[in-house]
Length: 357
Ligand SMILES: Nc1nc2c(ncn2[C@@H]2O[C@H](COP(=O)(O)OP(=O)(O)OP(=O)(O)O)[C@@H](O)[C@H]2O)c(=O)[nH]1
Ligand SMILES: [Zn+2]
Image (cartoon, rainbow, N blue to C red; front, side, top):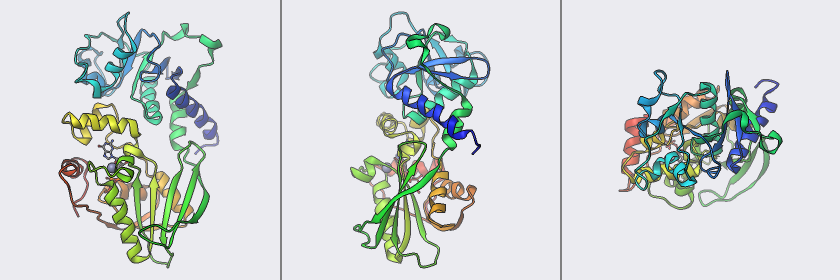
């Protein structure tokens, strides 16, 4: 992290907060800036145009409208003069397509700045919002004495990198898997997300069994049968308890990093027949938006440099190794399928490289 990064991260943090509140943000690119409000929180604003992800543009059959070039770029469309927040949401949210099938035709507009448009997509993900924006007519937008938050792509990158965490609190926490457990909370300076480690047993000098568990409210808390998260969480703790030495990192990366609301939109698309991979793509996100550097930093703070990793996901192994940790062994963590998650588990193996053993 560079010396200026904490300050840069602040600009991006402000922009993310503003978008969540429905306030405008001016995203600067290389040549020009784009002033946006998020479609789902600022939909009452009247705007001449919308900025949509490349995936959304493809679904709305807008790709032939764009000037020849990079098909991974977002697309800007002209809005009809009389539109309401309902239409803006119907354009923004693929999960509403069955309910609002008739949209358009729309005309594509030239992108004011490619880098600014891509940066806006990234901001939406950090904010847990759909990557769809209403675009103001640039210079005319000077409401409130122009107190609009400004942000650049470099500042958004600095925000994503600013995982400075510290151990903030620790306490004994007997759990059903083991009475010898301790919970350790890490405070992140960059955002309000507190990550947790649960240490099972006692450090005996051997390499610990470690599980990186990404938050899944539906599976971990509600007992959802759509995924394997809840059973994996408990099985991991049981395996640690059996050897009386292990570390569970509970990472607040709900929905593989797209947030709970967007994950539930992905579930709505799965109800319509898309698999877990295509649902993410259709929403305009990466298939997996997680960053395992935070886990590596937590392990370092716990003085752990070598682990036996409980996972079927080679990306987790690679993610830790890229951060300089040593994965002595990968231990599979298979859960018996049920009728609701069988297709999800097959998809993870067939499309995202998860191992069976
Ligand atoms: N976007 C999205 N996220 C999902 C879906 N189903 C589960 N998740 C999330 O996926 C993550 C699952 O994380 P893990 O079990 O830690 O990881 P994994 O990649 O399956 O790898 P393993 O270590 O083998 O379990 C959690 O953040 C869930 O909220 C889905 O259909 N869409
Ligand atoms: Zn889950």
